[in-house]
Length: 263
Ligand code: APR
Image (cartoon, rainbow, N blue to C red; front, side, top):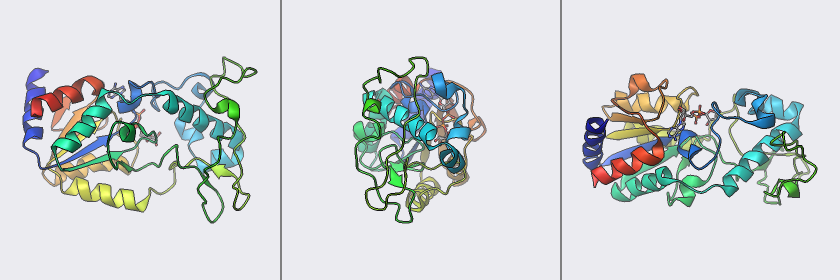
């Protein structure tokens, strides 16, 4: 409601250190599917938790690599939305602000955020499974996966198995540069995110269901150090209990209104 929005805008206007913590919901309006409410086609047969694991990749690399190529192509064709741009405006308005994202897309960067902290890696940083974890800079595994629909692909499948490429340095399989369930978060990003959450005046949590740890710990860390936690989400989430202010709405609507009110 507008009182909550005005209250949140006033708090944001007075903040010196802001953390914007985002999840898949901020990219939903860019047409990038979230994890838990709109997996389609072939991917609807699986839970994210079943595909985003080292075991799944070991068992069926083509299925897992195909899913990430599908996601990567969706992101390539997507544009940042008003929520991403408003986030970059907050960073411009409040010098002491940090963007921490669970997303593996590059939409924050393309909206002007200089250095978002990626807690779960990136679709654009594939690397090999060899000891050297060599970055893979080659072409996408399957030329057809590069946005042009593969003529013989089953249109119903909405995604296909795609053979992962091999590392040019050591010949091992290449994997997506994302953090899978059961894997550790990148230490630098996680440490910086904790530091930011423990020292901010405001933590905005946007478009995350708050069910995946340790990322979901950040709003609680901010609240414990006296920050105001403002949630932006059209639906209830596990973070309702740690949110000082709950703005029920879509990121692409609420964030620009927040920024306008805080100017
Ligand atoms: N604006 C804001 N929030 C939205 C919007 C929108 N337009 N549309 C949907 N949402 C919300 C949903 O209500 C939901 O709470 O976005 C949230 C998406 O939740 P998830 O799909 O669980 O995504 P996320 O919380 O980012 O998942 C966390 O889980 O699968 C792993 O590693 C993966 O980073 C991911 C992590």
